[in-house]
Amino acid sequence: MKAWLDTGFLLTILTHRRCADKAWALLRDSEIPVGISSLQLFVIKHGLSQNFTDLNAPKELLDVCISATKLLNWLLQQDVLKTVELDYEEMIAVADSWASKLRTPLPSLLLLWPACAAVSAAKIFLSFDPRTRALAKAAGLELLPQKL
Amino acid sequence: MKKRVSSREFFHSFARLHAAMKPGDTLVITKHGKPLGEFTKQPIKKSFPLPDLKTLGLEPDASLAARDLLYKKVMGEIEREGVA
Image (tube, rainbow over the protein chains, first blue to last red):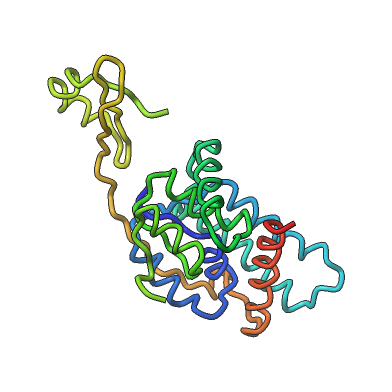
């Protein structure tokens, strides 16, 4: 598994939000399957599913949510994405060591996504988030896109 | 679990070991039972055609604002979880 997806990057693809075209282009040029952790998948699935039970959610939002869920399943079925078994103890130890060095605290889960990539021995980290990109870069991963 | 082989076996039986590996598989090479390094068989680069998401029903007709809103909601929750 050479490339690893940041959670926000995958969510960009799934929701077809702004810059989804750029994300699709980068994904298509990547060696597939692209890696992702079961934790990331759980967080995305759970985040999407919460909208299904929100009675006040606008219909348009539900439509995006349904298509995002379908697209996620399709990407997994087509082996474009593949969950990778990780040593979670090691991953948390890596995230913990970063957390202790950061001057500005980051949300815990944002520390974990690049830690997943680092522990999985991926070479490339696909992300649009400067915070997770900085950590991945420090761990020696190549970043895509190269510049934001 | 990655397969472990001794450095002796790796050098003397490379062709057999390589043939038994799938692209992307990794062998841990050991000496006296301790890992020396790893060998990974080159993964096959497959590119996939960009699917017609509309036809497959995988792209919503929703506005860009609704798409952005869902992204922000899910990511917002991820970030809140971290701070709580």
